[in-house]
Length: 519
Ligand SMILES: *Cc1c(COP(=O)(O)O)cnc(C)c1O
Image (cartoon, rainbow, N blue to C red; front, top):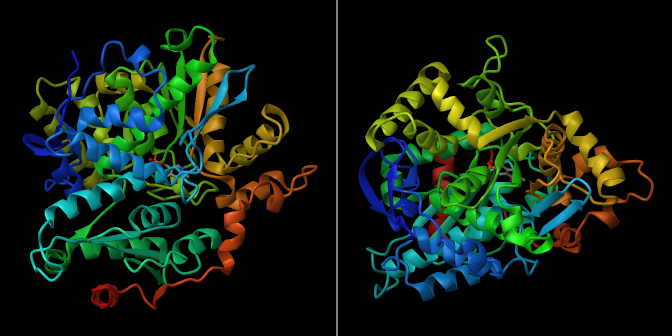
């Protein structure tokens, strides 16, 4: 029997279940927790055969239907939202799985064929269309000047990838205005040009004289300003939003079936012999893999691949989740060659922790209390420890690998010269491939397949790629890596606002002025 789960509760209290729409539009739960489905849905018994030849969009429809009730989004509307979301992708497969090396069964799940050339597009294109759908419906029949019209003002900070993916997901959406703050001179020229060349009237970028942390602080202050919030309905699209996780589940199924079609024996032969290695920062990408596995997709193991910001790797070794690698080091974020994974703590790990907690408690309530305790400890002391049983559960689901910057560049080079001649990895993907090579090294099972998730196009991270490949015979960044679209970016018309200091009142006044101009 198929079990669908279409209501949501917080990881910190499970007494109040809310609808999908509410979970998406609220983002963070009032108790500080994250929304999770009240139960993980299961798959049709014959899904391995029934879904074997579905397109990405068809798979998305089947999977999303298990998590969203038809009363909330009728089937035809859901299909439309999915079609629209993935019509912006350059690959007809949306997320193609390619083989890097047949001898070692090493594959890449390419997630960078969306409008901003990064994996966040897969989720944010969908989130933008969901917002549009819900707000349009809430405003049905209201005149343009009706004060009861619902709108949201999305405010976010970015050091690169998230900002551009959010902008491309929300451009031209009705009832949504977007303000993305970035530190002046500290995002790569390509990423800045991607953001500032979007001229839609509802999109605003603010270059803030300060650091990324200043920008993030400002966003937190804007969220914390109740009066401002009540008036302008500030919303977030960061990876705590459940819709982002949900949209990402599809590509695990899609890559499983893509590979199954390629190998002898098909899906039955691949079952329980497929490993996914995921370059991880906030734990959103790999969490979608966890949901796929719990739903019943026969994944053998999920591997967390981190850069030197390795809180998850250390946790899986020790059972201690600590902001600091050592007492002397203190809580520091290291600037690495894979900046989208430079984090101190992983915001979505709380969702996984709830499931781990549930295995050692008798009820949902108790699991929520345990998560609450851990998060309170983390806030107060910078760390928390879990029991042996919780750690054992986590280790059953996940293994982990960690790559230094040297290992990241060495792996880009190794793939280019040996493993898959001329294939160029971006540094985030390289962290995953480094992890995958370690996993392969450690296993005796020659019939296992290893899929590293490829989260960005190499052109977005030119410095790291150049560092790795400079001097290689025949290598030329302009010719081999840079897409035509990026070559045209510098010449395109731009718009951008400036804040000459990281000051809350200044940012608020810029937002208010721009909102007035929009209307
Ligand atoms: C965001 C991002 C990641 C990390 O994904 P999480 O869901 O935060 O773990 C990895 N690579 C790239 C290129 C990204 O933009």
